[in-house]
Amino acid sequence: MGGTLRFAAAALLAALAAIQGQPARAQDMLRGLDMNSPDMTMPEMSRADVEAVLAKGKGADFSGKRLSGLDLSGLDLSGVNLRAARLNGARLAGANLAGANLDQAWALKADFSGARLEGAHLFGTQLMGADLSKANLSGARIAGDLSMARLVGAKLAGADGSADEKNQSMGLMRAVLKSADLTGADLGRANFDRADLEFAKLSGANLAGASLREAEAAGADLRGARLDGADLSGLDVESARIDASAAPLFANAKNAGRAFRE
Image (cartoon, rainbow, N blue to C red):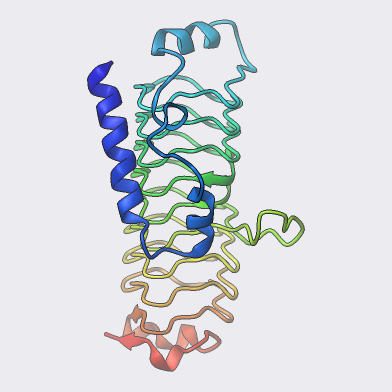
């Protein structure tokens, strides 16, 4: 356990160092929080404790629980309530989180690689620096901060990362994928209207039929991305890297003339 906790603390420090210079909203979430406190780094349950709760059947409730640093890889957490849970530095590789509620959860630098998150709810979730490589987020509602997250080969088909126009109490809530790596990810038919994709890596990604209306993609890498049927109206591509052959598809994009055509 000691090694796990040291890993969690190191992961948190790395995440904090990485977010310097990121949007004010992300920093506002951290302001006033002691990220080295037990609340953010120490688990109150063991993996065995979590398994015991899960063994009781569906509807497990871990809302607000401190689970940072735990190895929960491979567990069936489908449909569980993890609202406002602390999962910083936790390992959930290959776990089944389909339909889980992760609203307002903290999962900085957590490992969700290969995890199932179909239909999961991530509203206000803090996933900065998390690893979601090859994770399945198809149909998920994503209005959290995934800045610098790794989503290489992830499935986000039909996911909703658009801005929430009704609830403004927490500021503009939308998918924030600033500097995230979505190389080869599948975003087919996904809705990322007004999402933040600045400096994101989308090379080779599938964006066929996706909606990116008025999203921010300045500095993003869109080379080799599949864009047939995508709605790019108002998409800000200033200094973005696009294929010269795909330039006509950006006719209704913002700052299309300032994109680098390669």
